[in-house]
Length: 402
Ligand code: EZ4
Ligand code: CO
Image (cartoon, rainbow, N blue to C red; front, side, top):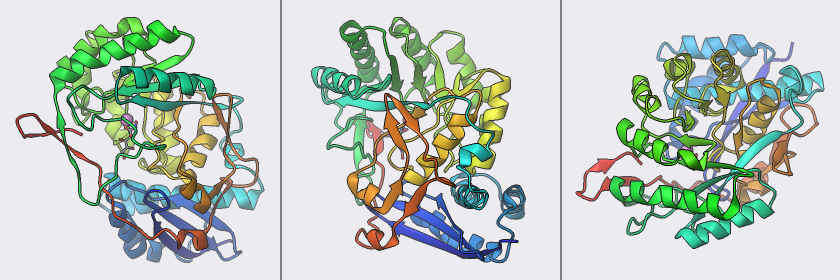
């Protein structure tokens, strides 16, 4: 029996902030899990250090499902991003360990390949329409078969999704930046640049767009209807999803596919969306939805209703999360697409990952486990610096969904 002997939590900011869990077994096998919750990093670090680590010591590292149930049911308090991210980190680390013990990459433990590679999309953006078009051209040249497009809305400083430097990083300030928002200006502008992209580049690649929770259901219905001829792969998070029923209203009006789930943390948060076929892609992720064990359960439910996967994969999900996602994506029958934003070079100095990008697809490392190493010496060069996501305010000063 190989027991969990140590549970260490690392918090560092190599390019951006990451929380990483490392488990060590009595046989000296190491397992890594991502525990990053953007802008709330220390809450998960404390949950793990203060409330989870003491419960893990001495437990059989092979019992992944049992440990998942123990941490989920055993907490009494259920769901929510802090709890589910902490459980995810443990679960991911245990899959990593199981792979190393078995001498197999994690995707082999999950049933083996269902496909040759993992189709990804990346983020094109622009401060205006011409610069967005240039960026789309650049991603086409880099070999992407799927591209998300976001452009600044004229007069709306800090529109969601517009990259400033080489890497898109919305959590950029030591206190939340307040950014103005106008739904009217966005609804007038966004369809015009999506149309301009199709006019210039045609239909030979997938085009995606993230509404980022900014619209009401009827506004989202109008948007989806307006862009139908652009044949989007999806419109993402058209409206906040606390009310799962509200997506019925969008569905009544438009055939533009819908993707939801990056802020949702459990199967119960997407249950109605899936079973009523109110979405086409479920975007829950390994790190925020309870790890590989729970995400696979969500994906299996989705498969019954012809909902495909489209996991969140922004830069605030660490290379450990990305590797875990690629292993899972490779195996699930109802895979759709994986979000992928390359990490900053500083991030890759700390996380050595064997995940490989080639011809618009990601490929997992073939070594046992997840195939990612954490260099804690390198991490020491990047001490934790708190950063917050922005907050959006309507032009009258009231808070809007960011
Ligand atoms: O705003 O990951 O689809 N991707 C996204 C991301 C999220 C960030 C929040 O931490 O919506 O850019
Ligand atoms: Co999104």
